[in-house]
Image 1: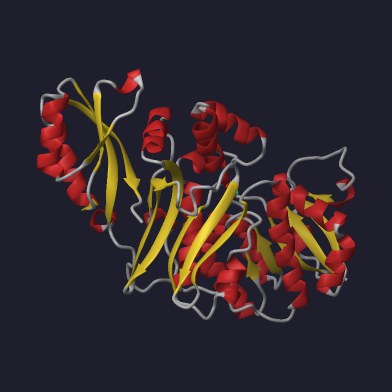
Image 2: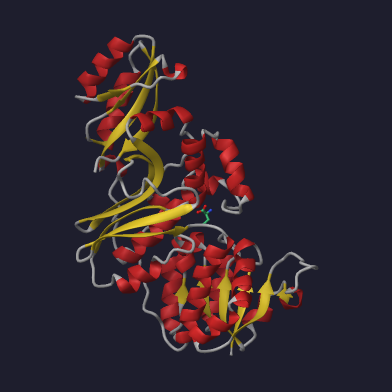
Length: 416
Ligand code: HSE
């Protein structure tokens, strides 16, 4: 029998308890031992819950109990999750988590403690919800040099964009739906501003490149500025808009970013809809491999958490050697030095002059128009490939002309 404690009885925590109760027999069979939930920590009371006899508000009940060998941290946020996790690891207890913010911020330190103590800090559920991605990267694809990772890493924003694309829903209505379905973070700004996807691409990058990629330094844009007109322009280009996390190794440096991208409908990530996530990995032996599944929600996330618990029970006496160190030097390439094509809209009352200016400043652009009265006073186009810093200089130049009212909706376009 292995005794565990669950920290946090919210969406994921209650899902973990439910999965362990529902699949108890098959889980015990696969783990080789029965898994028993001894405590659930939460500051709230749950008087009607059948689990209320397990509830405690005091972390010391758990940390001082030698019978508890695995702590499941599904509280989210940095504080007090960081302190509780560190104390649990230092007390020699394995920790499993779905907390991407904590892993992205303190992963190197917490993995270091786990290694030192010969225990495990596992976080399969922190990226891609129920999709297996951490373990495949660490084990099944271990023979490869991973050169590139690109993915839809946030279920809430993918749900919102899908609703905008398929149903013409406004951003606000679609966000409210996602919140009601339990996909969104406590503060949905973390979803819609791209921070959640940024933490996930930071974790994947750190894991594959072997040193801690600071999520605060990754260029991050969300989807709050994407309008239904942008969606319509993308449709006119036989494309869709997706929020993509991207990480690519170039020599001993890395490009990493999160941003909306216009991608062709032919691209494998274009058909990934609703709350689904997908992660496309390029390895130097395997080529392209794609992981797809439910990226958010109670039971999918719990499924990944419980899989980590089972893994620990099977390997209770050893560290899984999943580790990344602190980077010795800055490995992130400055976003201004990276290259892309861009979709741009310019408001003007003199379209011919703007088109001439754009061609002069940016080279041969592909002009696009849609049949929407809201766009009749604008010029929209896709630029050739440019460095980001060159694009910014060109757009500032364009903006300085009297016949240009505003330059807006700058969205990267994926060409391959
Ligand atoms: N808010 C996150 C999402 C939850 O929408 O993907 C899963 O990490």
